[in-house]
Length: 110
Length: 116
Image (cartoon, rainbow over all chains, first blue to last red; front, top):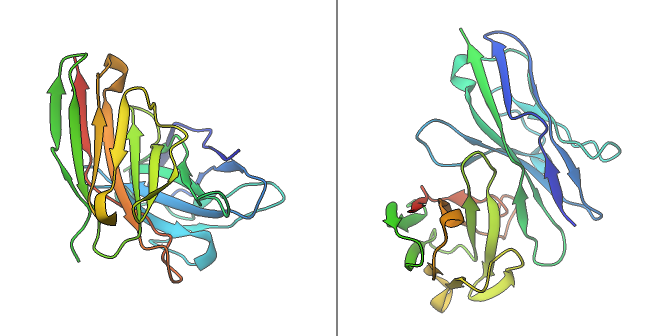
């Protein structure tokens, strides 16, 4: 069964501090992992995907298959990073369905 | 390009009434999703279509929820009869599913349902 766990509902940091949003998953095959973000009054949108191995808005995420994790990191948080962040997993079989974690609200304080 | 369109944006109904939501995905997108998002929770997949066929509806409460995607384009999600616990945002989304970035899901703004 597919499962995505985001252990923190809320993460509050000061501007300029490092940020790490945790994501752990459970899946027996080779999934594709994503981070989606929802800014205030905007629709849910893709932030980054593990296969791209890119940095978006200063955020990076590395897929660790041994620890089944896909944590999102940024070295210096900005106030505009305040948003809801969702980790998502797309399976590689059985319909290729995409499921989401419960989300973490990031609040960056001035 | 135009995004995923949903209507109505807001709906308030009494329990045991029925409601229908409509979704128009991004042109050319093969896969269409309906997610239910209850306040404080992440999106929960209700049903996933590939063109006009269902690939997953394991989380759809089939005694009261139904969905169809006629001609592999637009989709409707219906709830009949509604219960209080159906109060949620219903998110429609679509993805291309071909090419390097084809698995990116594009979301609509959501249809907010309140059952009283």
